[in-house]
Image (cartoon, rainbow, N blue to C red; front, side, top):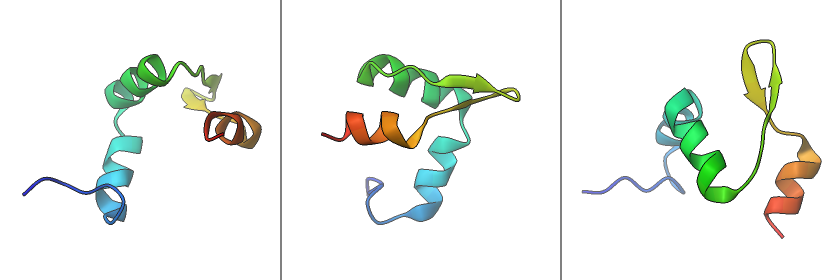
Length: 52
């Protein structure tokens, strides 16, 4: 059974807690996060612009 990220909060959180996955998502989606306190963050405006 494949994982469905639209229905599983745990699976989504696991991806968001995986630094390697986040780097690959940034590359694939063409978005650049902002380094902040040893983490990469996105502004609400960046997410909104991406979802358009």
